[in-house]
Amino acid sequence: MAETLKKGSRVTGAARDKLAADLKKKYDAGASIRALAEETGRSYGFVHRMLSESGVTLRGRGGATRGKKSPSV
Image (cartoon, rainbow, N blue to C red):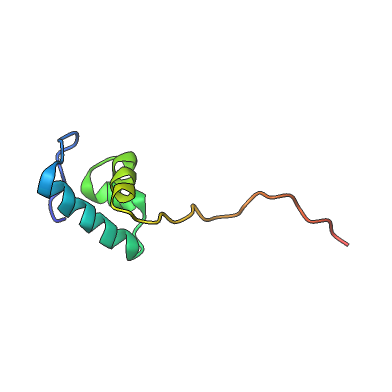
């Protein structure tokens, strides 16, 4: 994905399939959705949708979870 896509341009057909495959490969290799969005010049939502459509299992957000604290003894 050397060239960034023109923001707002419609991506269809073979170009969409190729973009989805590229995004899937990079996401599976550890890239974040935000990093992929920045790299392609598209929105977070667009990249998220493309990954979902290509069957990727999305990673959790990570970070600390806010569950109930277990009682300390």
